[in-house]
Figure 1 (cartoon, rainbow, N blue to C red):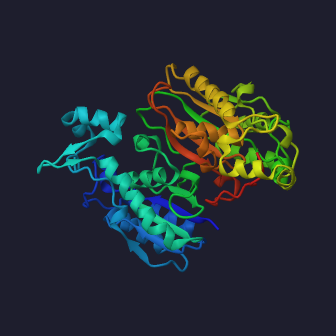
Figure 2 (cartoon, rainbow, N blue to C red):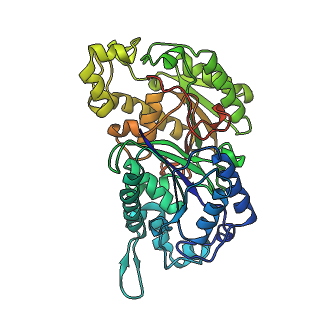
Figure 3 (cartoon, helix red, strand yellow):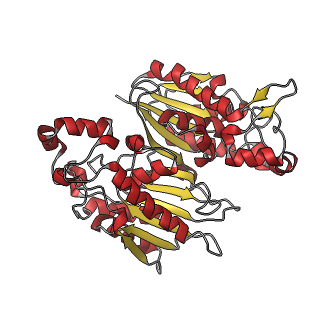
Length: 446
């Protein structure tokens, strides 16, 4: 049984509102908005059974945790721990961002481009690497905590930086990708640990904000490049039956079309300037349903985004594959990057064409007068390899990423396609389950 971990960033603080760098400074407290958002988090989590509850001891996180605690039913004891303290930026704390960019111009540039290389020399001559130290701190938290709560649900309330490092270290994202994932105030993230720290971990969702009235995180004012909304197609009967479909052109079922309509409503107030889908029926129909709320947007299709070809497995149930290809099926589950599908594709082939198509889309919409938002609808395997690529992962991380039917992912290119992307949200499915933060879509075959 998996160990579920729900990670929350603290609510808006007084220093957040003033754009002051906080680090481990413990002067700021929650604003009225921060308190209201924390109350909403508590309401959202109210019905879940929480078995362990940890928080940072810094007051903005502790106040958020206490506010959430007051809304939970039969919550466990709240446990503050220094292992969840925010990144230590001693030379920048209590300065505004524009002061740091002026006074520490070279260091700030390195912070944005090579965060794990940033070095601060303290008054006593000590060399301090903030991101490296925080990443190690996150690893130590997991090593101390996961073994204690096997098969349970853990709730964590902490900070932007430490949350990033908790997620990154759990699924194998390297330290240099520190700025590649976003954490909004009072967001929710979900990780599923299959065993101890070091065993496979699934990122079920990243940076959920819909419980705060924000379907997707807002675009930042300084944003220059495209925003891409990557969506998996709606459910098919073969998804529901756990039948491998691959490149078989299976259409949506009634529930899949309903999911498409829910995604359309969910994204109706999100501007969409262009749309691309796989050329197969199920993603194409999903995209067309979503675009019913965005009249005038033309849908283009590309075969590069079609699903992985399972070859002889297509049309078979997992139980049937187990009978004929037991060893290869187990290999697919344990080491997917090593599997050549019988008369089909391997993951590297899917990776190469999926990433190629993705980069073409990002590049084609990077040199516009105003930043554009595009809808891209594809498949489980395609979405997973694209997200792994964007996170700096490899094909062997394939199962670390979850993609529910009609899930929404949000990817920003703040500096255009030539710059590093930012994963604003991954696998958002709240629009499909009455607001539940848990992905309840069919767990069927690809």
